[in-house]
Length: 172
Image (cartoon, rainbow, N blue to C red; front, side, top):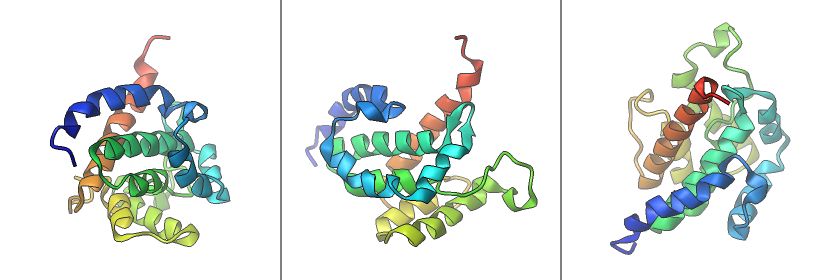
């Protein structure tokens, strides 16, 4: 990594953000090639049926996290392929966690493990991708992320989840 790559990060993230919730605007062919096989999976498409935060669906959320984490990691010369894939898969759960059901209890603590299990049913995961998915809810997961890319996913997910949650308080 170029020692000054981090200086480009704010500009890269600023430029990438308008596409985060409008994936049809993404023109990065490499990114599209990475995530297209995952997005074609029926289970991933089903994420569009569940609300994640405010009026943002789970599919919209994972696509936004994937794109922004990909941009973050690519700018810094990190593993952007794993970042894109783990971003799509990090919340791959097949239930609406807002519905009061005993099986949804402690969702914040438990869903990373469910996401790993579900992801393994549709694709092979590298050790890096598994760590990114399993640890993205730190500090709830107690054990912190092991890799810098996992820290990037954790940060991006927190920022976007906060933004999505606060949408309901914005004046339109």
